[in-house]
Image (cartoon, rainbow, N blue to C red; front, side, top):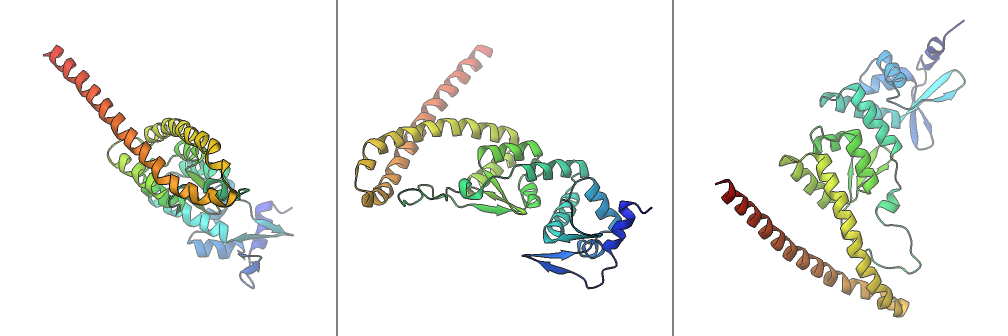
Length: 260
C-alpha cells in the first residue's frame, strides 16, 4: 500500500504547470521546488518541520501557491543571514500566531464623526528577513512577540507593518549603539504607560471642551490643538530631562568625591 509521501508523487509529474486559483498562482510540488531553488526532498522536510503551511489538497494532488513560494524565499534569506532552522521555525511561528489587524494598528477604523488622524507617523512594510537585517540578529521570536503586543507591528500576508518609521529608526539606532533590543522594547513599554496617561489628560480636556462644539467644527479644532498639545509635551519633557540629568550628574559627582 502506498505511503502518503509516495502518493504525493502525484504532485508531479507537472503536466500543465502552474494554475490559477483566485488571486494566487498555484504550483505542484516539483515546480514550486524548482522556482524556490531547492529540491523536492528539502521542500518536504520544511513542510514536516511546519516551516511552510500545508498545501491545498485536491484528490491525490497537493497544490502550493505564491504564499508558499514567498515563505520559501524568506527561509532561504534567513538561512543566508546565519539563522538556524530551529530559530527560523520559532520566528515564523511567532509571525503567524501574532496576526494583528492592520486597520486597528494604523487607526483606520471609522469613527461616528469623521476626523483627521492625530498621529502623523508613516507606517513601514517589511519582510521578516528585512526586519532581521534591521536589528542584526536581535529580531528573535520573543522580541517579535513583544513588538506585536505593543502594537508596533502587525502581520499583513507575508509582510510585517511597523506603525512608525520614526520609532523603527530610533529603535535601530539604539540597538546600533549597543542597547539590547529587548531593553529598548522594555523601555518602550514603560514610555507607553506614561504617554497613555498624558493622552488621557488631553482626552479629558477634549471631552469637556471640544466635544461640546458642533460636529462640523470638531475636526478643524483637533487640527488646531495638535501642535499645541505636542508643544506642551515636548517642552515639559525637555525641562524634566534637564532636571533629571542635573540630579544624576550631581549624584555621580558626589559619589566620585566619596570614592576619592
